[in-house]
Image (cartoon, rainbow, N blue to C red; front, side, top):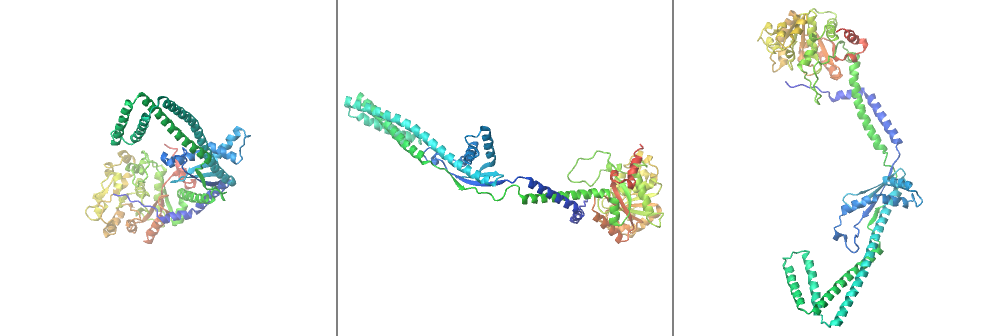
Length: 625
């Protein structure tokens, strides 16, 4: 059968919030006060930002960076690391006058480290812009640091590029002198050879043409292979010229070699001269590849601490903590001052307090979803027949029976006691069973009727079949003797034989199961046959105990309470809201039910104050084994 779960509604939560508003207010005020004090104790931190645009640098003067495959992302990330470096921080300190040539090394390192901690550079996404952020407790210093860092970075970039251009110019200059010298020597050799041999220069022309063809072939091989038609054609021409050169006289061959050497030296000298001019231009130009797009300004307010966000967050945390504390206090409060609160709130007596019983078997592991249904062995452990007759647990049921008996001015010798509750899982079934067992042990001829037709469970505790039962008797399918169960049935059922034999007075206890569950239990319970059966049972037994479903969920208890001598509400503190308990009492009172009082179930002994007596009872009986 599916488990029925009752949950608190929004009104119950609102009631708790209104009741514990002082706890919530105190928590909010405390957290806000702590946040305000903490915020004021913090040193204000200001922030200024300068934005720098970085453009592709000319790595080799005269050669565009697009030809070299300039990667903007990697280049900008590299420049960001340079801005964050100690070199830039040191030059920034020198620029704003924090260090000089007379500053000792230790002090200088401390100042540089301090500036590095105050400066942070980061790339603006999807752009070649870099944001230079300066943070400091001095707002004027932030703008000065950000702008000085940007200027130092730009100046250092110009100096680095100028230095590279100068080094390149000096290198080319040395190579140019050597190339000029080699060209002059080769030209002089060619002149002397011509004057000496009187050659016509045919070999020289062939040598120049051969050199030209070899140059073209080298260019084609950068794109094509040896099998390309153009390459094959050039190879044929080169082979033809080489064959012509082999047929020339020795003087013509030498003339061709000298001519080729002059041509090579001349081309090298021309190239170096061109590069030298470009290097001179680049060195004099002082190319700037970074520009300040947005200079930093003095901030008007600190970025930390943020009073508005801190106080807002403090208020939010205070409300959350206040709600948590409110529900905790509410839960704890209902477990301590429960008697006075229930009697004042319901205007109804508390006629019994049932102490908590620890489970003897190993508890199940913690699960996120609470399980309402208990294990049968756990329930059996809480039956009074498994406890000493002197235990406060058994005595609490004797006290309950005595209070019920003397709540009325005119006491009936025979009566029907109906047990119900406002919601599920409050322990009304176990309380009613133990109440009947305690009465039987005390010598009262008692009948327990399982009339919770929604979720019957007592028959499983005793190991007795549910069918036949009360419904079968009311419908006329079975006689009364056929549906009653006594000690003999318990011996064959699920109870321990030793406990049954060792429990005097258990022969006075009779059990009547629910029987076949009808489609509509309300029709069966409101029939005239049920009324006649209850009066018959009342005449046959001194005490008839009825276990009924929760009154807020089903009408069964309201129907049967009209025929009950006494109606008892079972309430487990902290389980159901007080409003639900009040509603259950009002519903019973509206039909003139004789509600004699409330039983507080599952109370821990350490939670009871000494003036209630259970504390002393626990101490008194704990001295005996």
